[in-house]
Length: 318
Ligand code: BMA
Image 1 (cartoon, helix red, strand yellow):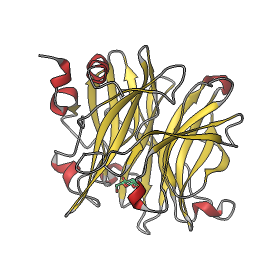
Image 2 (image 1 turned 30 degrees about the vertical axis):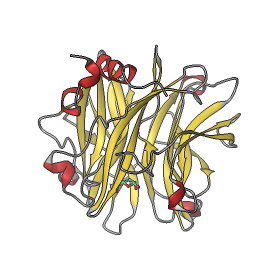
Image 3 (image 1 turned 90 degrees about the horizontal axis):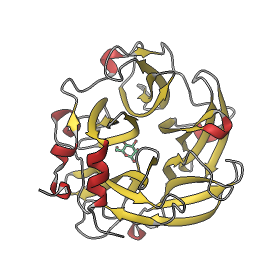
Image 4 (image 1 turned 90 degrees about the vertical axis):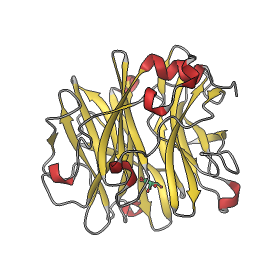
């Protein structure tokens, strides 16, 4: 059987004791814990989780574990809080981080959503230790979110994937790439992955999930598609592959979704039928995907790296 025929059940294995983290594990009062970025830091797995408080405002808090599965050590207070006095764009919270290690700067770069009065936008911060952070402020105006950096430069410029939303929803929300000489000023904007139309699972609105993963075959991209139905939206995941040298060029894209809400903890929560990863880690021959489930809790699924790559390489050439 061709690996291209695998269903999401075969590609991904949900951790049997999901959720791995929820408000029940949290050291302080919170409504929900979800949509975490992930990074391997000093041999441990670090999650930077979105935590929503009882006002409805989100902040970010780290949880660290040796095996990335259990025994999490969670900061006892918010790690990165909105600072609306200095950063008015953070007035309604900070959400959905993505972390990229920038070897050239010896720092982690965090792209996150700042919820401003003008709508959600992309902000950035740098850190070496996930204790102190240097905020770069807003890098994309509203409405824009689901952003992550590539870890390397292309022709001397940094590159970021992000998802601006046009004035009319009829025009669709697509994934764009932008370039910068200094991480602060961005240009050369270009739309690269389009939401499909009509009945497709990824019609009208898509967004990047985890940061691009470098492979020998290209940059592996995990993205979400939002299907609007009579009873709400369904958030599912697909893959694409971008050219290593020129990431504006898409090489492959999955036609079918590869992971979607099925387990009860993904189907029911503050927002039903959502799987929303902001981080993935390649460990040996496995890929660990950390995802928010139903905007309420944090879960883990693993896939064989080779299976993911085989699957996308058997998908249509774009
Ligand atoms: C998106 C983001 C995510 C959220 C998802 C489902 O627009 O706001 O944080 O998980 O909607 O509610």
